[in-house]
Length: 165
Image (cartoon, rainbow, N blue to C red):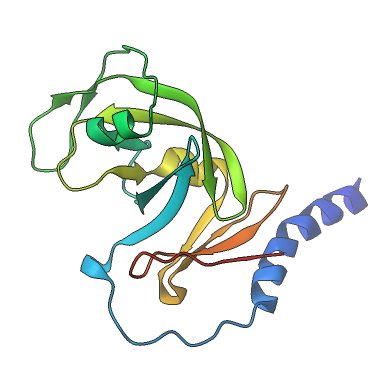
């Protein structure tokens, strides 16, 4: 019984050991726009850019972007409340949408929401599901999902680079 627990603990540490083994090149000392973390993704096979937001509870997509990505949203009701703004009605939820971020592929739920500043926001719903660790000092995020962990660099001037093992 103790051996099983030790092996289970070793598996959890394994991902951290893999991250430690990565030799990161120093990043240039330029700043990203507003210090926000974006990744490029494919949604339904179409390219988009998404804000990675640890302060968002769910994943959100604007109405215009949902149309461009040809998402089919259910007419589920709901309300959204952002800090310092009035509550607004959501426009449904697109469930089980195929998404690629770097070499990671999976299905996500996207709430279609009235948004002014962003096309898509990836929140804690996805970050917890695939075990994302934001690494802003490396301009990247680690996806530590057991099946295929990978490192995804954040977008800098429209480029995306991945490092997977």
